[in-house]
Length: 428
Image (cartoon, rainbow, N blue to C red; front, side, top):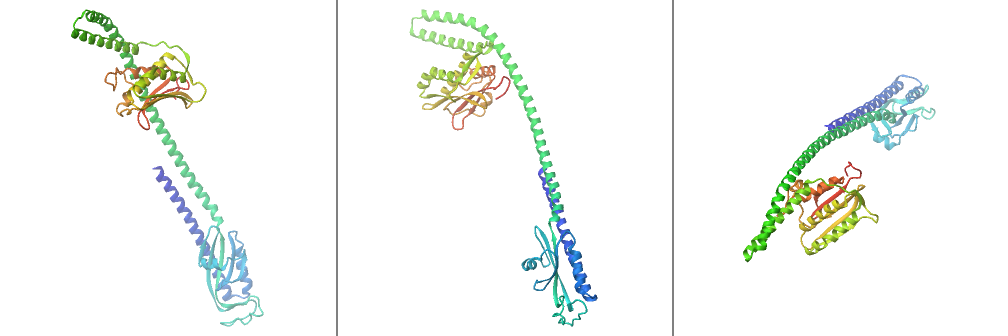
């Protein structure tokens, strides 16, 4: 709509300018024809033709918009003129009857002298000749002549440019109005999106809080009886003699231990954490993680590399133990997702003024439908996963005023990015 209005304004402005130009050209033509009529009257009916013709030219030449006015013969040779010099014969040929350029408007209008000549004083001319041509300075033979009128077209610019300026101002105001409208609509959309995100975040927090309470209650209720069951299974295992019974009791102990491990994960997820605030060197943390997981990566046929931006330490304030748990979780996920022969990179850098850690794996990437659910508790794509690792990692990031995100890389594999806020409460 805005574009259509802008085009309409430009079209109307152009139409007005063209109308002004047409009116100016008509004015020039009308003035030239008036001069021709006056000269014809002088030649046919009045004495002292020279003085009166020169007077007509002088009167027209006094107009501020007239640059030059004169008479030329049929060969375009000047006979008389007032003002500036008349245009060249080439220009006059192009101007018959009118030529408009950027600077001037030239009108060439023909008239015939049939009564002998344009003569001065008491000179009398016969048809076809001028007997006094040798004695009089204004003895002009009969034939075809042209009145030449040159108008200053720059005066038209005094009318044209305000029109163009008003049109440009109108277009600019429309564009500004369009930009303000778009910004307002985007602001409303951003506010609506922010309100929706806040509502979802509040809902997520309430769900997590309920889940933590449920996990804590279930874990405590199950852990004690499960400990008793494990003790009995261990006793039966120790008393078993045949190979089949040992195999069965060993399997029972393994599954019970796995249940205890899951319960500990639930409790770890549910219990509030006590943070120890210290300055943590992220580069040193990345190198420590690579050292701890180096054997795992080597066993999987992978290379684990660490890169730290710059020479100075990149530090944050936080709990070193919690951040180490988070980074170990991300690196272990990268090792499990990558195929043999690939490369895993842990990069520590500063992005937009905030410290950041990137873990890039060499796997197949993350399915698009799984991306929105990765940080939901108990959601997992692993066969034997609990679905709490990333949820716990996201909570650790939140506790440290950071954002944890998972995306697919530009080539293959996934990229886990931990970006710390520049200031508490400020998003990176």
